[in-house]
Amino acid sequence: MAIEYREWREGDDLALLEIWGGPETVQAGQFRGTLAPSGNAPWRRCIVAEDIVDGVAIPVAAAVVHEASLHPERLWAYIEVARDHRRAGVGSTLLTMLRHEAARAPSGVSKLRCKVEPGTPGAAFAEAAGLAPIQRSRLVVVDPAPLKLPVFGDGSESAATDQVEDLATGSVELSDVVGRYYTAVHHWDSPGELSVAMVQRLFLDDLSGAHGAIVLRAPKASAFGHGIAASRKGRLEGFAISYAEGAPAPGADGGAAVPSEVFLGHEPKLGEGEARAAVRDLLALIAYQHPVMLELDDAMTALRAVVEPLLETGRAHVQGSETLVVSDPA
Image: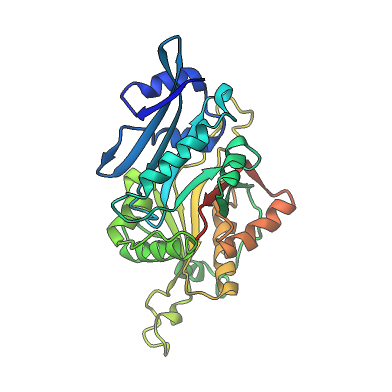
């Protein structure tokens, strides 16, 4: 093979798609969207490898490295090589070139990370390149009525209303808890400073797909340290943000429901037992009649403690394959 390397040009996506075919993994499908011309706003460098056959240059591989405003402590990197050109050094050469570009990133950040699926060629390449897993993520579908419904206070409707509330996604209170929770469960790859406006944009406004939120509050007396003015709402302990309503599956007998996508979390200042109770009670409520789909990272310890027993008993299942975030050593 006579391989030459150059910057990405318009039209390379179509040429490579003919060679690559469909993405081999979900992660590959996502990262292909980051292949684009190099630029500085945001900073990105994208390289194409061409095989010269009878004087004709045929794109066979591409690689990209870019900065991210969210999780800015590492650079995202991605390399894809046509199947018939693998194990020939093309990917390794591209990685070396990406590292050379990363060393000149304006942020001063040079550590690389990527997402891979365990057991795939991409995961094997990442391991050989010295990238090690720093997080595991799974999409988990929880079946209807997986847990016994909670009883709030004296069991009355008013007690339940005091603690369970439909909250507007524009709520500053909700944005504050969501932002601090996201930061807390991403201690392994800091998201950086999250303003209320950024949290709104990422998780809660119409463009994010959010269309509703349910929150769980502590009893009213917790609003003040000495129980004064106990009519005030208790502190927000847990939240469930829905991004897609369950609906009948096309052509499914009996109108089987499509799982609703939900971001489920808790006030990060809660103790582990309180956090588990908060997410357990919310999960029991939101999945009582319809299935829900949750993204479960290993760092979400309270949610894992609630969901993993459901996986073991068959009341929940992993959808698709696991995702590993791999990174250069710290």
